[in-house]
Length: 144
Image 1 (cartoon, one colour):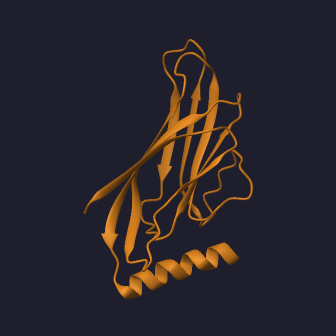
Image 2 (tube, helix red, strand yellow):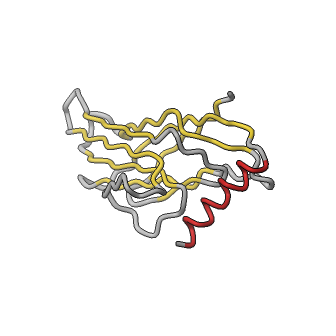
């Protein structure tokens, strides 16, 4: 299966959109790798929470709730100024297939620095039935 990569730098309190939608919804994606990195390693302290959701978020925070069916991945990175070893934790729910845009959020609870992210997604062809199911799940999650 082909792998599609996305990378970016996201500001504190921001939300990025990763464009995945197609006119037919016949292309599906699942996250296979997710990494985050401080924008100024070793120079500034930071405590970053970066999350990936299947729908746009109205609140950007550092709360991680694994029971949230819209959460696709979460990453936490803490680094102290002048320390050589940052601490990181990444969780990816790799059994979820999406065919609509996804959203990346970031909160730095230590300061107001940005954070880099890198996402690898496995791309797959969806049958008409699979496409309809994935789209309906996304619509249901958006509306309620």
